[in-house]
Length: 276
Image (cartoon, rainbow, N blue to C red):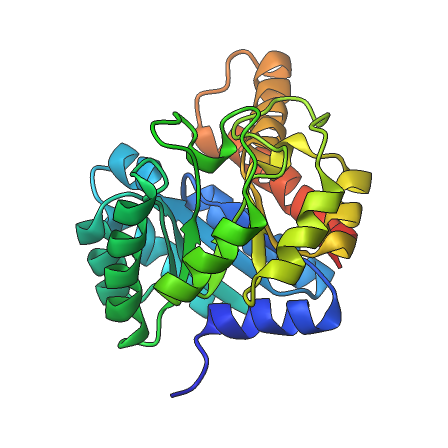
């Protein structure tokens, strides 16, 4: 069976010692901006739609189909990924829509329950040539593996990957979701130990909180897929606010969403150069 687009993008990056940018889509303008940035940089990219975003839109299908359409029309290699899905039903919906990878997050469960649930999802997805990312985390942690202070154990990570047959593993090495400042302190030695321990690419969640130098060092230490959302949302909101501040009577959303989209496209292009 041929590689899924996600598998092809991540595998090629891992073999070349580069990182892959995985950016979250909140609305149509995000998808357009991320693809425009990838085309400008001449780099592959992963568009991510989270369970929270699907909930915001009322269902996965509207934003999912729009994102897939934008990806398919791109001149750059683009994969569409379901991010942080805790619902097995949502995973199946994504696969049926045409997503080529999913991140199944059972990290809030006990270890044995996480393994069992993830193994079942992996079997379902692999039968349909869909790439699976999973997360190994802390019981009851609000942010799972990325709650402050949590760290992934390399031996447990190896056992988890072997038991579940997942294609990529999100690990906790010092970053945290939704950070508004880029000052997270990563454990680069732990990244290297995890890289040596597991046979699949490592994923850094909460990368908005990591500065450029930290991202480069993380990739050198063994990270491959780098998830960024809040950082782009800040750029989007800042550009929209700047326009509205100088045009207080503006009523047409296109007038301020356009500059916001352009700002995200420029930052995506820049980040893809950093990651490569």
